[in-house]
Amino acid sequence: MKVICTQENLKTGLVSVGRIISSSVSLPILSNVLLKTENGLLKISSTNLEIAVTTYVRCKVEEEGVVTVACKTLSDLVGSLPNKNITLETKETELSVETENYHTTIKTLPAEEFPLIPEVENVKNFSLSSQELKQALTQVVFAVSTNQTQPEISGVLFKTEGGVLKIAATDRYRLAEKKLNLSENPNLPHSLILPQKTIIELSRNIGTQEGQVQIAVNETQISFTLNNTQIVSRLIDGEYPPYEQIIPSEFTTTITTNRQALVNGLRAGGVFSQNNASVKVEYDSSAQALVLHTESGELGKSVVELPSRVEGQNGGLMVNFHYLLECLANLTAENVVIKVTNDSSPSLLTPENNDSYLYLVMPIKN
Image (cartoon, rainbow, N blue to C red; front, side):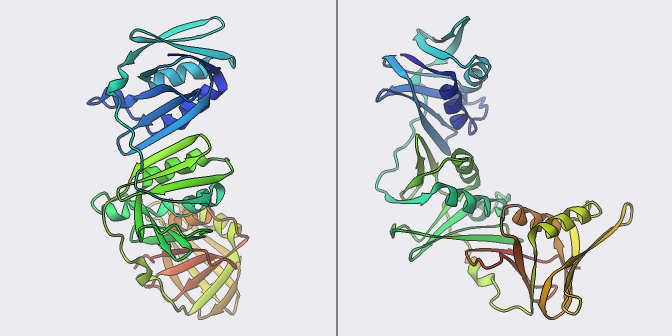
């Protein structure tokens, strides 16, 4: 193999595939990337046996071929080279990397040892706007359970209902759900569960890219393709819990408040709530205020009063302020609406005038 490509293109390609790679003592080949010429491009692939990422880099192909080389070594080297044309050439068991005054060789492993990256066959296909999908993923992925003994909720749910795709995550203490309208009926399986790592990697790869993400699904795998990059992932086997059943349909109080003011208040109060992460939230319809109380016997206490529109009964409850901040940080609405029943029932948070997103939080019981 012999190809010539720019340092910038090669660096970008290696970054795209390199994040899923982890050092594997038992399978050293998993620390490598596969470089292969295909259709006049350089195809770069990586896998950790759960997720596979493939991207294509523009280049001049002088000799066809395939090779596998340590990803970190090649990435670190390319990242330190000047922004000039780089020549990659295989020479027996080494890969030659040359540009201007730099002449380097890296040890390689046989390409036959690299795991086969599966094709998603017998598929159902549909597409979504890249930025809408990324926003939806970032608004739910933080609520995924980290408890691996419950694999069903250690991933993100994709569920279709008519022309709507519901994307949801829960750890049983909170629940996030985002709805996306589909322009086509993909006739998908009723629900799919994707690993959290897949969702994170997909969001990173989308970045600021515009366009349509092409999605293909079969019984065990899903693939996402945007521009020159494809991510293939296994699906989590299992039945996602029927979370809709725990979403209350009625509330006694509705509070509308400024999102950024609430963020600032929670951060200020959180200084005095490091041990238990709790904040007492009081709401008063006569004062039209939302009041945040936090206290530490060692550090002190904080009271933050936020002018708000409070409709309904007065009351208060204890919540984990981290849970609220993680949600609020991923919203863009000027105001948010909080719906409360009592201090022992879940509360609902939504952006004002937007029913496509909801966030349910369980209270901390005294």
